[in-house]
Amino acid sequence: MVRALLAAMILASILAGTAAVAAQRTVTLAVDGMTCASCPYIVKQSLSRVPGVERVEVSYADKRAVVTFDDSKTDVAALTKATASVGFPSELAE
Image (tube, rainbow, N blue to C red; front, side, top):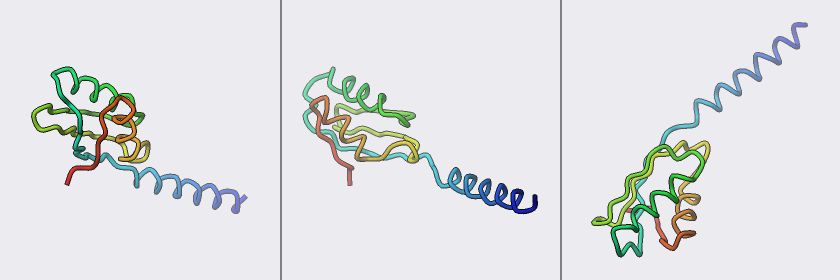
């Protein structure tokens, strides 16, 4: 019985530790190819569909997208893939 309780406590601490590692992250992407007023809408929609994305702001004037996401559910590679899939290649802005 003591072993089962100890095993359950260890498992619970591991799972709690994993949840603590996940964090909200905000990145800025440089988005190429936006040439008209509807382009930011298309970019925003593509990023919003990525699981884990919580907020997206796209600036046509700056050719940038600011994305807030749960880094346990997605990453920058998934974000850049999403914009590229709708014709707007992007990369992490410096």
